[in-house]
Length: 232
Image (tube, one colour):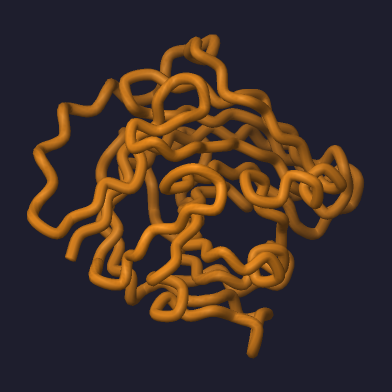
């Protein structure tokens, strides 16, 4: 698994630290209507019943909640205000579609568009220590890979971007990807501040998907996130 170890991708996590994010990005509430053009992928087939020991972490529903009683949020973040813009997050058939744009016109060296799901009400965490793999439905019509992050409850680690990440390849067609949890690791710039997946898994506060590719030219961001499940 290739990991994004660039120090340029630090950011504040919107769903958990909204006040900090307000200084460097924007947050939009979900809407109950689809985006102007249809999603790139058709609605996924009904998922099979979870296997014994599996945990369905999140399935997005309209209005900002998941079918499991958690919450989700889409957000934009950048070093310089204005270099990342979130358009909207639209949910249909258990899939969230996040759109926006990235452009380092103000000189940002890092930025992106993200989507974060939590396992319950604010402050609730999920114990994933018995799980071995993450199964997530993803698609993007504008990126070849997306970054996943498993986030714990420590505010300082969240704010530094030092919870473990993994980069995953994606295609325009919505499909389920399987990522071993052992493939997650903190980004290289974190050094001693970085949290391993072993230390994070017992108290997971959120799972995040983001498109962190920022360049000197304007680019559209359009990705989809569906069912998130953990399996032993």
